[in-house]
Picture 1 (cartoon, rainbow, N blue to C red):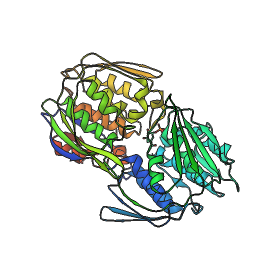
Picture 2 (tube, rainbow, N blue to C red):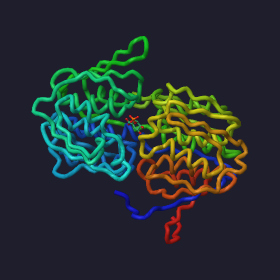
Picture 3 (cartoon, rainbow, N blue to C red):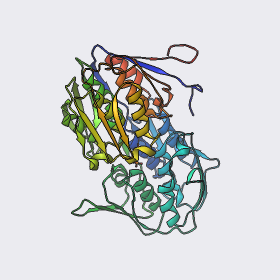
Picture 4 (spheres, rainbow, N blue to C red):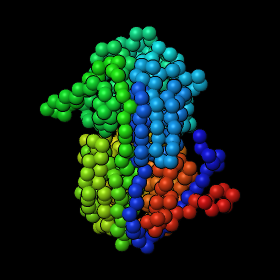
Amino acid sequence: MMHQAAPLPATAHRADSLSGAIRVPGDKSISHRSLMFGGLASGETVITGLLEGEDVLATGRAMAAMGAKVTREDACWRVFGTGNGALLEPESPLDFGNAGTGCRLTMGLVGSYHMTSRFIGDASLSRRPMKRVLDPLRQMGVAVEAEEGDRLPVTLRGPATPVPITYRVPVASAQVKSAVLLAGLNIAGTTTVIEPVMTRDHTEKMLMGFGAKIEVAEDADGVRTIRIEGQPTLKGRTIDVPGDPSSAAFPLVAGLIVPGADITIENVLMNPTRTGIVLTLQEMGGLIDIVNWRDAGGEDVADLRVRSSELKGVAVPPERAPSMIDEYPVLAVAAAFAEGETVMDGIEELRVKESDRLHAVARGLEANGVDCTESEACLTVRGTPSGKGIGGGTVETHLDHRIAMAFLTMGLAAEKPVTIDDSRMVATSFPQFFDLMGELGATISRTTPEGDDR
Ligand code: S3P
């Protein structure tokens, strides 16, 4: 899956300023779902703006292995789906590389089929918990074989007649919610998901666009009940994937912490289940102008103008975590350049991402002279606005793309350069990261162990 076999370290240097306008690649969550739902629906789905990162490409290969026809011409992807209920048994294991979203959603999608499917992944994905998705599948009648602790490799054998269930998701996770809803697509009757804390709603919104019958009700406490009617006809459609706010977060923070910076990030998805980072950085005093709000195929998008700012520490409300769950590593970097203390509580889910992100961030901050305290579900960072004394360390990235990009962002404002041990995983979600940051004026060097610059 990875093109470069050996680790590829990278070093980011303090920037004089940053300027210009960039467009980040398509949203990862929507890109996975576009290929998946397009591969399932009848007829043709045409996708523009797809994120062509390793994670998403793995989902495309998995859909092709189950009978979908996936083609690319220039920057336009065309998917000819099998029709709902008509996926084929994959002949070999489905390899999801580093991608938790692709793997968990596809487990849901195929688990309710009367067939055998096997799931494998890289060292990071093979350490991540799958029980959260396998438990509801077991309740539907799926036979599961897994490594100890419900880890990959996993083999699923769906029953002849899967049972529709009502499932209350025990953790705030869009992946778990989505896996149950997708399994429900191939089960006669109504499958119900109860979601106590709202998470990103791309599965519900996009499936409705493909023709699924989904009802969403919300009670006074914000508890959502989502009902999906099984065995609908899904029809292919046209999708223009908006820019990924989780990728935008890196230039966004860079624009705030690099002195004299003034940059614009265009076409960013502004779905409220994804914009916690923008709100938090604004609360910290970040100068972020949200301009050119518009509707793009049912999702809000906007351009973000970002200027160098004097940041102040804040306490981030724990209930905001689902709307910025992937952005805490780079928020911790912003906090390192803020006056006072930033408290990030209620973030225990960070421990089961591509790496234990709470641990990886705390060690990376310490290695670069930033004062912080880590507990089971909380990270507190005490910042230095001038960046004086920050940097000079090497960060262990643990096969985690967001740890890699967060600490390269830190190096752009730190007094001394910041090095990461491996930059290969950046290609899983943001292959253009180095080029786009370079366009803004950043100096980030990548060096192979043999000493060749990249
Ligand atoms: C995602 C959901 C989140 C997020 C991941 C993408 C999705 O994971 O961290 O990067 O597309 O549904 P959880 O659902 O496990 O929180």
